[in-house]
Length: 239
Ligand SMILES: [Zn+2]
Image (cartoon, rainbow, N blue to C red; front, side, top):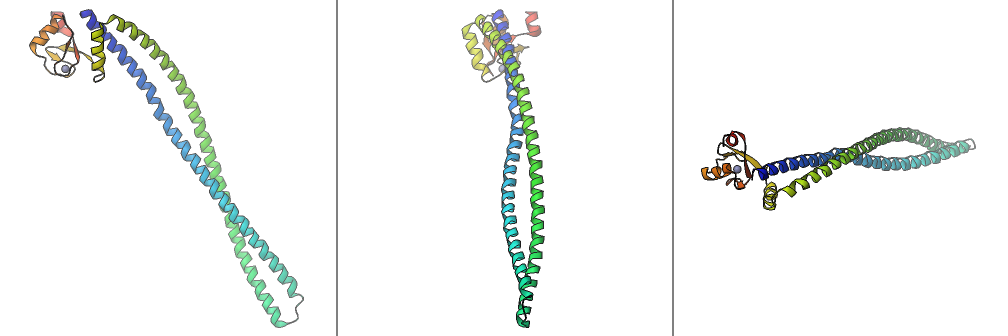
């Protein structure tokens, strides 16, 4: 029985080690998620810049057309005015000319502003693309690093599982099933009982049960928490 208890404790140690390796493996994913979220944000920002830029380009093209058309009208008026002899007609054409000149000045200022806006969007786009490239490089680097670590951990898990299998073959099947069932609830399925107390839940074990445990003739569970109890410490030495 003592041998079986010892084996169960050893099995628990192997399982705890395996759990730890698996937890380490799982802890890698969240780190990548943050970078992936950053990349998604930068990508959608890039698309927004592109749409904004396209809209501004259309605006600029339209405004340029308007300016060109006005300049044509102005040229026409200037041409016309040299050939007018009638005063009334002269002032009418002059008025139109001045009106169009003012208008074209205004539109050209607007056009200039639009060109500046477009340049600014292009610059922001370039910065965004640069950040995106950096994040992608960071992600690729981390993925590579993690893949390496995961592979190393997987080798450890395989070795651990091999050791585990070997260990379980030495353990009584009924005990093993009991251990596995309890371990679904408590990671420490096997606990030491000392001075009449279960160290898993820190509740006193009924004296009769504790005495039976010290006799070491059967595998006993704590009546309170159901963990498998093994003897250890000074009680065992003093037995
Ligand atoms: Zn207990």
